[in-house]
Length: 264
Length: 316
Image (tube, rainbow over all chains, first blue to last red; front, side, top):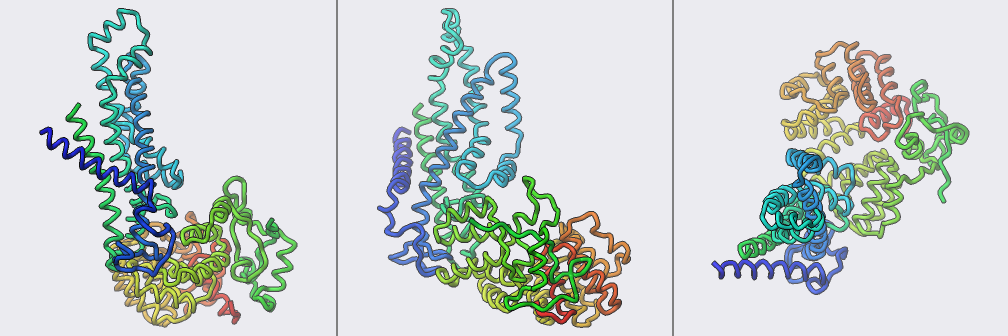
């Protein structure tokens, strides 16, 4: 069992490290600039590993430069969702009116159809990075909040918290020094899952045409390939490779999460 | 700093009462109408329609006079255009962003100039050729439009949309037989899409009238129509009237509470249907279809404008 966890961890970290390296040093992977043009719809060759697209851009170069966009949106929205989820989760675990309000808020967001709301709101908010990050985070905190709430309630009923109360520690002191440290493992697991969710949501939104066409993420690339007739021209690389990259990135986070979860 | 647009009422090549003046003066060298130019200098151009943020439609949109009559009118950039212009670095995406923003303001001439310039750097790019095809016909250059659209048709995964546009361009060029055969193809492709199907029926109806064909073929095609016309209420009204499913009075008021665009489509359809039956009604509906000049980019408006010019033996 330990060996399988280790293999999952190494595999996950290797894939993740590759993508991180790609996003930080894209020039190491491709000699071309992101908007450099060549002949249209070139087949894969030594000079163009995945061929070129309808405008003459090298597809591999687009994927390499798209890594940082995908990463940036995935990680920032996941972090934001984590902060929101943790805050709302802890508050909803309080007794009394505040707890009821935040529990209601969680229940409300659970019932909302996430993708439909995102599509509608994104259409109004525009396709800027910040808007997409905010929107994904806005609908990505719910699961985190529910799990945090459950664990906070459990921790609150434990004997050492009772002990703290008897010793006269304040609510904030208990929350920051005694409850929060016990939530870190959950928060870390949720962060890894959150990145997966955010990357998938961003890809779905981009595929539906809500994305920045100038700096395409992998989801946007699939959308462009689909709209620009990659299929009828047999440019399957243009359609498949961004999807493979999304799957690999999600797999990397999943494997790391899996390994660390078992460890915990 | 751009000079703000001179305000003036949109008299010009448009019907009297509905704007079109059949006794219009001779066009000058650049295609503009001298009388119109004068009137443009003195009057307000605003159509009086309130728009967002307290602006009028004509404040941020182009007009017939600029796009079709080549008058020297400046339409100020709106926020989107300004931002697209500022961020443009000459790459395909940025220029197309700018073109999109210009088209949103109905500034087709400027958009076309951008696309033509971009086409030198990015030849054979499908999306660009498709855009050029559409922009050319919006500016009444049907030959160029047909050239690009035909080229795109060989290399497309959106056969229905392109065939439909090409059919309408053929209709504008009075090549009704070809338009009809293209529309027959569209009817097959749009069998599951009521909204598109009714549009195809509408232009098929117009072609049939122009070719002096009976409505038998139209009736056959209409058997597959599920009357789920979506927002194409104007097309639907005209087709229903042609198929004797509506009386004239009902057809006339069919789109009264709907958008101006639907009313334009309906009135143009009615004008074509009455072409051989009642010249007076034909003229009346044609005139009504051209009432709202803000719709100059609409397919039916272009068709109506062409018909009007043809009937008055003028070259658009």
